Length: 418
Image (cartoon, rainbow, N blue to C red; front, side, top):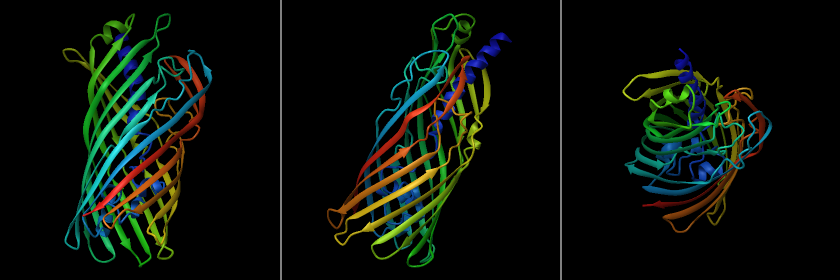
């Protein structure tokens, strides 16, 4: 029984980190295109003129009149600095835990007559992470986590009539995770847990509709299904002493099961005149369902332990407003603001992914190079909240908040019409 409790304790430590790292906090609307980055994601659900509608709302593809391909590159630049008030285990605040990453993307739409469209989106929908360092004050909850992923999303759209269009698709997402956590061993040096690129292929369905109520007013709706994820791979332990040493020496495989939650987004687009359009959107995301997670650790020759954990997350809501203006020379500018509620209370927030409320401010600029080729540049400033934490991990308490907690998204795209 003593060995069982020790093993389950290790599993719980891992569970605290792996579940939240893979959540990515919330579904981020930035996919590196002018609509997503230049409007704070507000224009996504009513996008009916750009190839990235393949994934933002496939019904919008019916508004594209010729075959087209959109190529994008997005830089993600986070600055995440924790400031501790209490740290009973000592250590450092970790400096800037964020690191820069680049996300390429491509979206292609093929016209099939007047009413049908086929599309394909290829991007990296999951990426980034945090590295607090080995001596972080919350090292018994998280030291380093790196998430990478690649997504393929085929979709189809059909124009029912001049007002209504429907679309559907499925995302095939490959994900892998690296994770480092320290284990407190009083009187001895810290032990170390390393998860090396546990991975899985998962699927998530999405369905959309657009409705042109008038020549000026368009509504859009997008629904994403819940998606199950089962990450599997190797787990390793270092510097383990006492009764933990013989137990962990026999453990070599880990599995983490959880679900990406369902969500629904609704938006509108209204043409004030031939040059200016305003956009608004709201959404709901069922992050309360994400908290129920299963973790299994298996030993050499079979035999393993399984535990479950509920992070006690809440559903979230989002609201946004944006505007776009097209000049006489066909250059376009846009801006947007958006707010997302926090999925977790201050008392439940953990260091592996200290998600809080989010506020976005975006802008973009684009223009034509020729009749068949155009470009766009966009940027979003995302404030991630204060991320207050007061946690106990490995028998040690740490408390504080983030003095700086933001991400800058910068994107460049080229769109070609065939």
